[in-house]
Length: 357
Ligand SMILES: *Cc1c(COP(=O)(O)O)cnc(C)c1O
Image 1 (tube, rainbow, N blue to C red):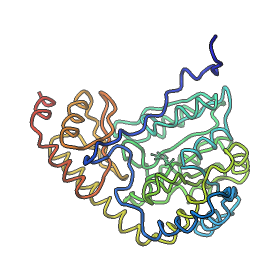
Image 2: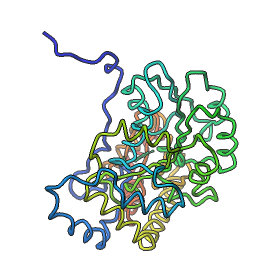
Image 3: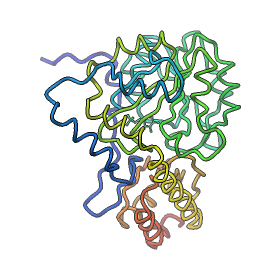
Image 4: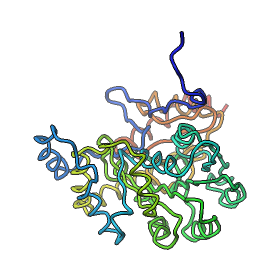
């Protein structure tokens, strides 16, 4: 006897977490913040520990209210989820079903294809251009009557590239209004081009745009699982229908509000991560690797068949990165010490010589 298994699930790959690091190694495989939580955030969470026998506020009213105020939008347009990956799932389930198409660039966030298949919809992956950037013209050309939703990951994971606010605006304007454009800005805080914040502006100006933000990366709350979306209110209503009830814990809500209170302090940390990202890019380039300039908290090295060799030398130097076999490697920008370690690892001769041979 075989237990039931939903048809189609065989095509869904299980999500792969960035490799964990052995004690003492630098974990640069999941784009987490290298900084421990702010004392004020820890304090806010501690104050809520004594009420963990109660369910959280399912509407997350305090957090959503703060976000609505921050962006000057209707609180009904703000939804929260257990990380923005849950919001991506909500948006897909709210907009697409069997036979519908959901488009994204490729390579991009690894979760997209699985989430689309889990919804029974059809993933449409449009290759990045030769600069490892979204090919918005090709994406426009790939729209069909069955397209329901398009993800634009900006800056893109894992390549760190951005599309400009102007290009994104032209794209959004050209997409039919019955297709939802979801701008995933998980890394927007690390963007030092002028396009910072483009997604929220587009959300304000266009009826078919949603934006995803997370507290996991720049705000350093990856372990608590909280993110939010700004979406057209009728979409947000449907998101609430498909959401898993009580998905965002009270601790996560409290930590998110405390983080919004501490944005000045967090900005300093974000600047440090950006400085180490630039240093990381420089080190890789000097060592002869084809590192792509990045606007996120990681650097992509499309090393092709040399990927394994680069991964091995990093590993030997105590650095755990995210390798995509024969394609490339993504290294998160960690603390100064982490990037010192990358610097030393890049000197490890055996693997490098082997790679260049
Ligand atoms: C990390 C990431 C997210 C969200 O992560 P959560 O921890 O679920 O908030 C969303 N999109 C992209 C592209 C990411 O890299």
